[in-house]
Amino acid sequence: MNKSNLLFLFDYTQWANHRLLDTAARLPTEKFADPHRTTYGSLRGILVHILVSYQVWLGRCRDGRMPPVFPIDEEFPDVAAFNRRFSALEAELRAYLESLSEDDMQRLVTHTTSRGEVFTNRLWQIFTHLFNHATQHRSEAAEVMTEYGESPGNLDLIWYLREIEG
Image 1: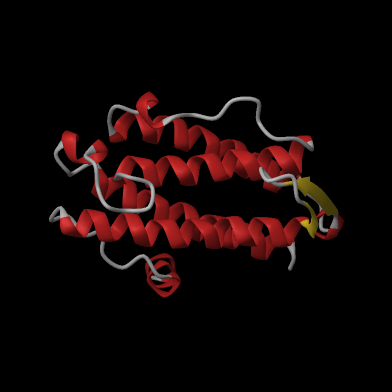
Image 2: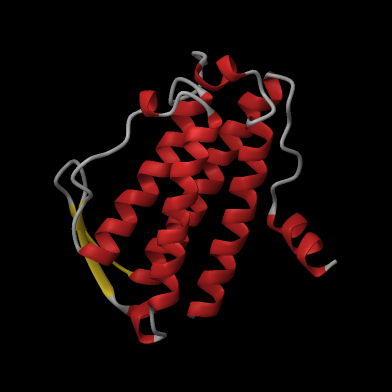
């Protein structure tokens, strides 16, 4: 995978994330943190999980280490607070991706999981995973929001292409 392809995937992921967040902002504020049977306990929990995954992988790839502190759900009383933090992290991620060379895409990154397992992957593989991971959890969040009466609509790649290509 080349840098252009990776930036394309990032652009799509960012588009889909913001469609989701725009929809979440239309929900009653209490629904953001209301307990839900979903894996991460609430809509907010799902979104914070996506944010943490961005921090983890950016830290591993850019800095060679995990971030020292992770955000917790309670730091985000509403969608606006989450969106501010998430948008800043997306800007950081974009700046990092744009700074990479084509050769960097093939760079090996060795990382240790939270369980102490050591793995090595190419940089492009890690970011492809990150964007795919966000897709999985956006679908979970979309299901929660749909249950709450606010569907984010189509978040698939083809819909992004139709929008940007007119």
